[in-house]
Image (cartoon, rainbow, N blue to C red; front, top):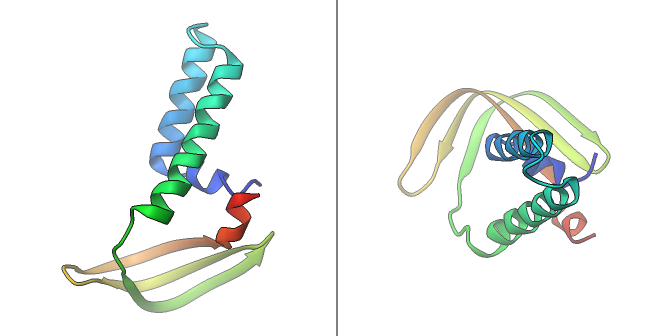
Length: 106
């Protein structure tokens, strides 16, 4: 799995992929152009996370499961709480997928 696929598996990434697939199927878009759009999406997401996100959030919860596979950490927390300056939000279950940001530039 490519590191960028983490973004593509988000809600916005899945919607973009479905839309591009439909456009290719209906011959409104070439497959090559659809791939270029996905690659631009990957670059845009990386840029936004590196340069535009300034908020910091702390997460506390009970660690249910953790995994490390292909340089990607996956954590599942139960009864977690997200805390920031303006937010204190309890969540019953949360899945966190994290990877080394150095891998994004490869």
